[in-house]
Amino acid sequence: MMRGHHDMGGLPAGPVELSEHDYALWEKRVDALMVLLSQEGRQLLTVDELRRNIESIGGDAYETMSYYERWIFAITQTMIQRGVVSIDELNRKMAEVEARPASEQT
Amino acid sequence: MKVDAIAPCFKVGDAVRVRAMYSPGHIRTPWYVRGRSGAIERLCGVFANPEELAYARPGTPRQPLYRVRFTQRDLWPDYAGGEYDSIEIEIYQHWLEPTE
Figure 1: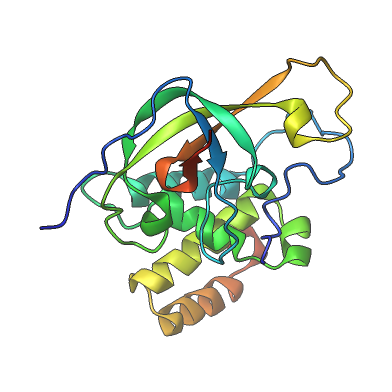
Figure 2 (figure 1 turned 60 degrees about the horizontal axis):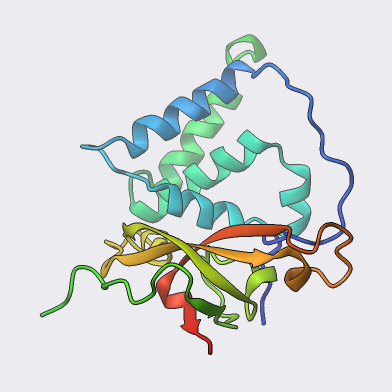
């Protein structure tokens, strides 16, 4: 029997954090990316694939990653699984972005 | 010929039990409700199966989705609230079986 880490309903937990916060630019971009990829006519991703890939994050990482960090992880996984980007393309692009000055990385 | 959609087999008020199944895979039925009994509150519609959509497949045959009502006391042995407090959870038909 495998209870997924995400399937935590009813387990002991701390108080619910109710405060709102402003979203960073990169978080808004992740949201936009999700909308564009799942749009009818494009359909490169379903919310169900996104959820499955979020659920595949290990327990420790799931707890420490923020909401949109989980999203971009899951979007990236889906793009690899669908063959939209190759791992090599992704690695080269990440290296290119990391080589930019910090002010231009977002 | 493969069917496109499964016909609904439960009606409002029917007593049902959530199947106690624990496979890996993308599952929308919460762990805490598996094996528990409740009643059909409404039919929400017939939808592509998320257990298939999660793997980029078409999700057919589409499955009826119900809102199922459980009493909180049936789900949580130490529940301290009212006797008739309930919780409603949306569950696909293939996760439900009839009870007497």
